[in-house]
Picture 1 (cartoon, rainbow, N blue to C red):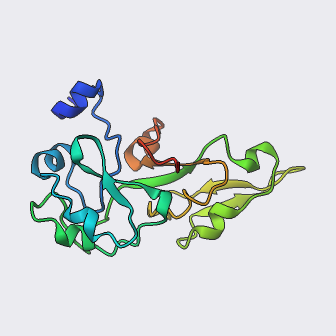
Picture 2: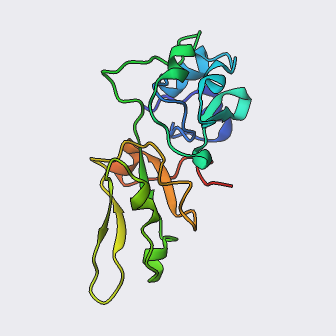
Length: 178
């Protein structure tokens, strides 16, 4: 049985997919929505402006300003415990993915996303008679989002790792840079 929050139910998300990237070290979505009071402390704490108010006043990540450095400032400032900073746990379970809009899939040489990926998760697979195709290694990707904003055609989407592994990789909401 899938545990869906009231908000997910009202949005019609009966399968319980989280569709928004919350700040790093967020509790699972139902717990997060229960504990977060929308105070904005995490928003104020983010020196890079990556956290913004989303639906219902709850914080969400926008990668249009750059990458998350996983500094933990947002989680340490959370007074309600909706974000729990722990160096022993992963900050989140999101991964980047390259969509069919990628210039390399159109036969155009581009490596902007790979140049921005400090983790080295984006590699380019050579194809016979064509340009090298961008591919993300999910085992290496930390979901920082450094590859999202610089993509000239907005071909990088961020996925929840559990959906990507199951083959149902639906991009999370609002990662396109506008």
